[in-house]
Length: 253
Image (tube, one colour):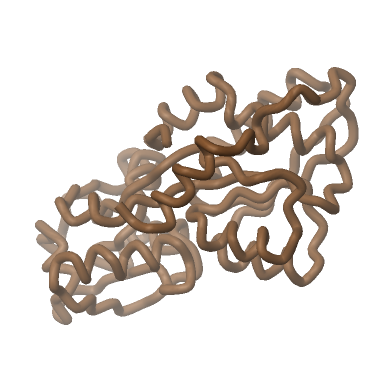
């Protein structure tokens, strides 16, 4: 398991984190909560946001889904937001080191990679080695985003050199290439394969265990709506939130 995941696991055991504490969220929440979140969280976070809105009719939850590195860069450049959720702890460290978080980040889920192929697997993909074959058309995540960093690790673990035809800015963009039939395969998260349903097929591979991504979340120091931010983080880290993440294919930290 990767250093950044192991370090985050220690931190979440040692610290109270964003999702805990005695100062619970205000029952009379209102206004807008802006959540910057990794693209792989799109479906489950959208559902959790709707749940929070149902519980607090005066509250609106708005999302900015993108690659974790792009989101971290936006935050360090002054973009206003209430909550940040990254697909690895390296990108959370970027925000933390810039003193933008109001509480210690909480590790709330883990995820692993899976090969996604179009229905029927027309490219005949069987394992990770096929993604190192220049004769195949392959989409991978760019190295600067968490799914790209994990991709590099699984290829290193397998002793292979990837042969991508396109490098995408986030995992959902890589998945879209498969859904449109533009590539023979893409390396995405197992949760993305699950979310795509019948639009893709998933192929597991053993090297995925060498690159487990730990997802971290926190409220931000300059949050325009700190009470709403805390409420969203508490929902994500609650049993209800953890159940929703598990149903979406994420593992508990």
